[in-house]
Length: 210
Image (cartoon, rainbow, N blue to C red):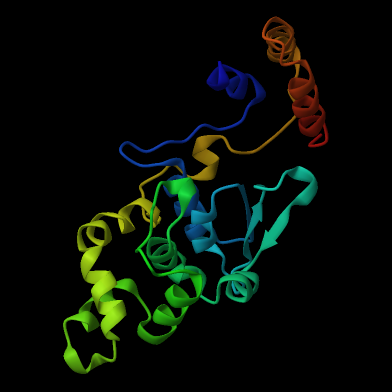
């Protein structure tokens, strides 16, 4: 039903086998040659924030009346890591929304300070095996205890940015008003499935594209 509503509204549906929606969004945002606003409640997409390219995240987790504009600058200010470090940061400190428990005993401040020093999770784990690399004993022990988790978890958070996807033109991504029989069917579905308010707001927003 969701797919039918989107088709009638003329909203493009794009997916990639064996990948999540955030990989599709991340690929488009990373490859776009123009400013992009990614509207999402998924913090994983903070990875795409790029002030130089004008890529922002409109974060919706607190509701549409409390939208938070996330830029590269605000990600750094809030989490003390760069957007490209966010996946490693979330892996270390954990993220309940992704089912990531994190590394026991490593919280936000420690995760940020480790990434500030070593740059990436991969470099940090390499440093664990080097006695003179400056990783403290307690941190070394915590990372060692979480070895199996750290091997699997990054793939859950890290975005794929190079999927082979149709261009926005090929996908039919241009929004426009819904007219004729498509509009009538969409309004009928709204009534039959009690989607009235949502459908009316959607049609009103698309009408503004005229």
